[in-house]
Length: 148
Image (cartoon, rainbow, N blue to C red; front, side):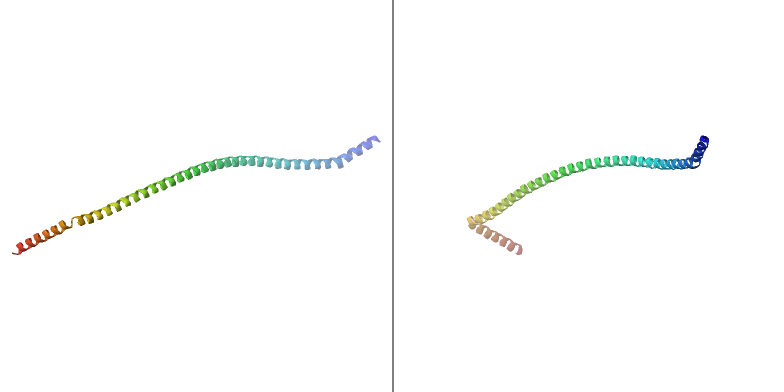
């Protein structure tokens, strides 16, 4: 009787349980294969993401340095333009003063020459009249001699 029970048990295990277990094991194998593939893809994606992030970090560092350099150059250019503007304003101011000085000197010379000629004519009017008369007489004599 024990043998019959043992045979029934073995038959039950062979017929019912083992195929079910084999089926479960095959499903586990398929699940593990898919899981392994997904894990492998996930690891590759993570590695690519890490590499990409490193590249982005390097680019951002270079951009930050480039911006610092550009800001420094912009500051230097601003300072240079400011200095140049100040020099131009100073030069304009000096040139304006020089032009004003030259204008004043020209006006003084002009006034002086007008005043001097007028003063001289006023002071020497008699000599001027005599000289003009003498020149008129000489020119008249020359004209009369050439005609005659």
